[in-house]
Length: 291
DNA sequence: GGACGAGACCGCCAAG
DNA sequence: AGCTTGGCGGTCTCGT
Image (cartoon, rainbow, N blue to C red; front, side, top):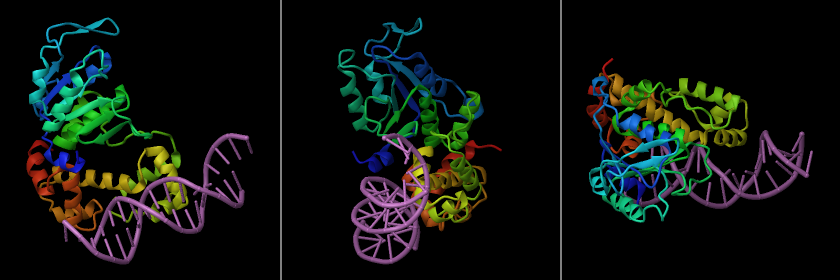
């Protein structure tokens, strides 16, 4: 499955099914319930159709810690989901029909969140991996970041920030470093404030008083990504926020302020990242953000 | 959408 | 010995 093709095909997440295999970790389950299962429409967050699914609906599933959950829907519920969160690895003994079921929905165009273990998460300090339509989180608390990332991707940064606030979580804009590194941390602070400037490797290395090679190496150790990829990500986010918050701002102007050398380049990255043009993005999300 | 020049990335290795 | 640094250069990705 070509990720690019799949990303374009993927539908916006409005309908979420949490799939429970034999048993799950309570915290992980709570994350999905918190992000997708609460009604925040009064705060401008879109309504999610949310259901907990198991092979045998109505049968209570015991969770560690003395909790019990009783899924109300069966596997047929997966067919209407845009997003299927597999709450914990289904062992072959636990539910042989789950893997084919998930694969079938994946082929249909649904997205899937997996706890690590299903697919190898390559050596990567980042806490989750976005390989739309497959999302892999490295651990329970990383699932929070992953869910918010997904919400931001589909519904805009403002919506994700609203959900994060209501969960008393720092919005996913200032991610903690996977490995602490003061030099890199202050470089990131500086770069965030200078996204409209030239942020080539050469420039950043000079700013951080490091050689290009050391910058590259320590950057990856600290952030899990490369300097260029990180800068690009921040620029897309900035452009995204500008488009959401400043309705009068032209795409040309937004591109310039976010550090893109042309509006064409911004369009290219928007298409790749969101599957739509900046103008389409604004038309979809701008009405949601109210001062 | 394809070609091509520029720049980024990263394995390797010697040096600190 | 164990670890970090920085230069080199092949390869790949990006922007135009």
